[in-house]
Length: 418
Image (tube, rainbow, N blue to C red; front, side):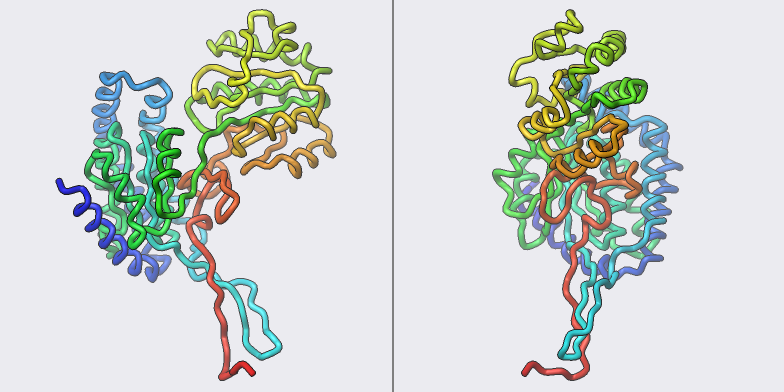
């Protein structure tokens, strides 16, 4: 296959389709989404069989546990993809929404209209659910999508893509509105991230290596997060039952996700009470603990943490633990080592909670809740195209609004500028 020629054709088709999708009405887009969801439910056995082929190949290649976790599809996962599409269909259509209309002294009216970005390129590793989520979000927000999944999920992605095409056809929309790249050749990525005539924005979903490559080579704007070093801080005025429950869930509900807690911070005045029961849970679940000197004095079987540990996104059953003096100490640690993804405080003190929300500079900041809630589905976005730790355009889980922009509109009645 001539990769450059193939990708140019994909880009041209996407650009043409983007104009048709941008003008599609809400009913047409919702019909496509509901048919996609129904096809996914109907073909659940086919999707699981395709995923089993990918999983077998991935194990044979010796891929790590975190990637295998992200690659795996279950019956619940398939149902979740369908439910996500149905939720997107139920959400208000942002395209064409007009806001902030004001009369100016000249008599003109000035406001803003929400519009699609155009063509969105999504590059992702494992996570076959992204194929459905990205297709649904891009379609509802009036964009065409070019999806390039990882070679490890090729069978899964193509099986889901067949359901997506069925939905597009049922609604009278071009199949090129959502194109799933059919080659595993890495050169396709190099082409996609430089096709500035055809692609308006790139959204990566993958490991640090992939995102660093895109940051270095892309000639198109990228909505990204490099890694998720997420923190939970247990304050000296925390409810310890809540703290234990959150520290458990934030780390152990899934190890391979970007919203999993990697560092637990504990106020020194409650560390002796809080750490032993939390350490007991981690010990029972096989989580390796790496701690500071104060932490290890309380939990002696904890390994010594290095400076590198505070910077590390483990994506594995490993956690770093640090005892800090107080709220300011916790926020100083997060400022120094965090990745601006998600942080949570456990406290019953309203003033401290307000300070944490205001002063911690991350895409999601929480009070008395697990970091695992940092997710488009949990936030009511229907699904997410990814999570952004950027500060311009989109931040946090990127849903429909994050896949649109605004343009100024002006309504006049013959006015000319003097």
